[in-house]
Amino acid sequence: ASSGTLRMLALMTAIYGEAGGNLIGIEEPENYVHPRALGAFAAHLLEARSRAQILITTHSPLLLNYVDDPAVICIVHHTDDIGTKVVREADPQAIRQALDASGFGLGEFHETKGFGG
Image (tube, rainbow, N blue to C red):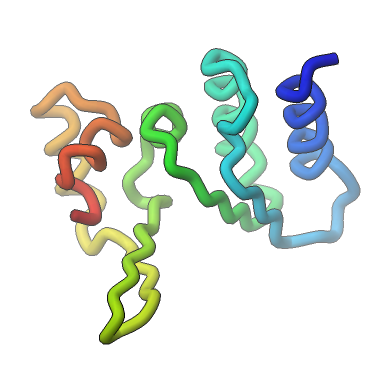
């Protein structure tokens, strides 16, 4: 099996594995994964959030497009004077309206500095 297939199997095991854990952390799930498989994985992530808190780190606009929910996104900012700060969008409904008006996906919107910029 390819490294992407093995990685996806490991991620799916983390999501659907034993019950009891309430936090699942996954770093950059897009690495080595085919874009279509990433879309299916995002659907599983959204379904699994009813069973566990899921923390994903990503640099992938494509994954953000698949998630497509501004309310679940946090942006990490780092500056020398303040340090690292995690910020949730104050008005996710306004982001949704901007996405609908622009035709952008969430990832594209973030890339233009519209979200978390």
